[in-house]
Image (cartoon, rainbow, N blue to C red):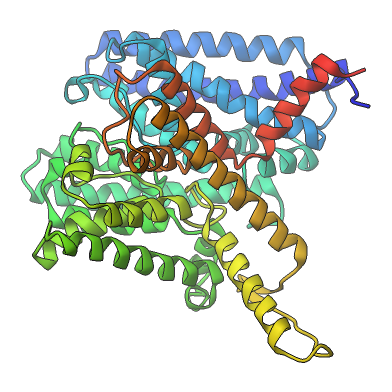
Length: 500
């Protein structure tokens, strides 16, 4: 028998959702200040309207649903899944008011793409958008990469038990510090330190390449937020191709890789344990899959002689590959070049890279390296069981920060999440084919959306059908949250209708 949710369930969900919305509202003060400093009065008013609407919604929920009860697992999962939907709708308000999005649905698409660190975009005339709106596009990636709920855990949510349920609901299950509040603050500390260093590095490179200092550091901050949080938005419509700088591309590759690394691994590197990089299952799996997928891509590109020079193969081939594998979505080629200049084998290499993703507890989406490593270890264990005598005891271990014994529940979890992602990639591909796009192109765009990457072969555009836009929005949402909180929300809605 399905139990109908109680009033206490509704109040707890509403109360904590309201707190998260209040946190989101306060972040809109940053583009307001940028707009005022740049003399952009109308853009500042757009964000003031968005801030006021968000504050009203947040305060109404907090006051109407006030409770002192901590969240249980179901409530925590639902708060997380709803908070990302709320962030999409509220974050889209100032974007739509700017006039650079044809419809509110388009603004919601870009808002979800930003918060989910995907990078697919429907914005119009990006090269002439205001500084405030351009910065907001990248700021929501910075927020989404660390996690919308991380803001609440850092500043608004009290109670260790409820906080941990929110933390896990946002597709994070590894604590770095003794509790999740300290873990959340450490994640922000790492991100802010890298933000300063990355902005300086990119800004200096921009100045050396001839950009004016203000533009260089503004672009540097925006590009860093999108690169470290493996997002893919860029201040200009040409993405990284706009800069025409080999050094700029190298710096962004380093930042993308840093963003794809587990925050727990960052902690151990900061503590001086650099040997962990070589021993860690995730890090070694990432290196192997990057090399494997690049070999596939390079063979495909070499077959048709698209980039005959090694430097061009690196800048056009490897850059797209590492951008896809880290889930970033920066491009140094135009979207149509994937279709017109790359063959099917090269596209398959990038699709595989996008579908695999980076590390758990990082800013990336997709299946993730720890799961791939665990599945491989389980495969080796099964081979040993077949080869060795029946009386032999087979114990498989792997190193992930510490030595861990491989258990069936770990393998089962890794396989289930992997299967869920593969199904999600396939669903989006089917919808794309329904609207007349070739299979490989549809699979490319679907994988990019569901894996929160942002590379595009040209399907994503303001003119695509509304159903395809909604499909990609749902893929970005489900892919970023890794399904469990999404499934919990679906079960909750079913319980409301059919529960007794």
